[in-house]
Image (tube, rainbow, N blue to C red; front, side, top):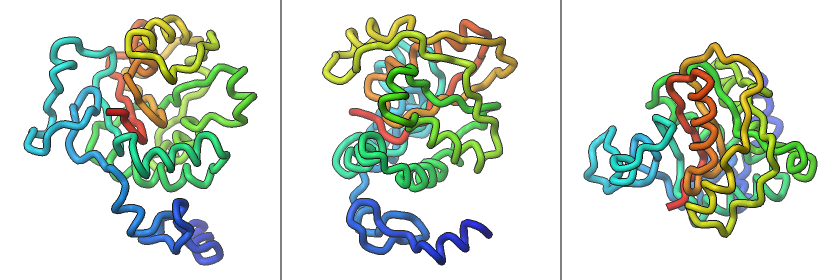
Length: 229
């Protein structure tokens, strides 16, 4: 009811072009059609696959070197309009983007297995103070509320302020993020979903999954807005 009242007072408006939104979302039909949505992807790392690949298929890299996490769902390729949306959200304090991105991702999550809780990829306190908010946590709050799942905070902390991953290759990213996370309390959950805004090489979520599994978690899913290809 509150959502309906809010929509009447503040009608949805496209975040990308400011035209009226469509289907109750803050994006118009034209901009929605420009989003590089992923239709078929590797079930483990979410890299886009050829359209003729079947559901549940794995990419060659996951077959040869499986990551620590087990399941991945990503909404879009990180290109074009997806970059514009994430940039607005992440670097220009457009928290209104979190509602749109969460709603779009929720549609995709209807097709995946249900975890016991959600953990947002944590920021180091120094970076959190500088940015003012954790974009993954804001997404997680909306998705956790809609799915009626606990959003668990402070279970995993980022204890090392690693340099920015931007500009590093896959091997450098793995070395850069190694040992950056610590589990701070016992975990009673066996299936956890990690939520992040953009998965590039997967190094960050892979390190998080490694630490969680070492603490006794059996299954780690990764949910993200965009996947670099």
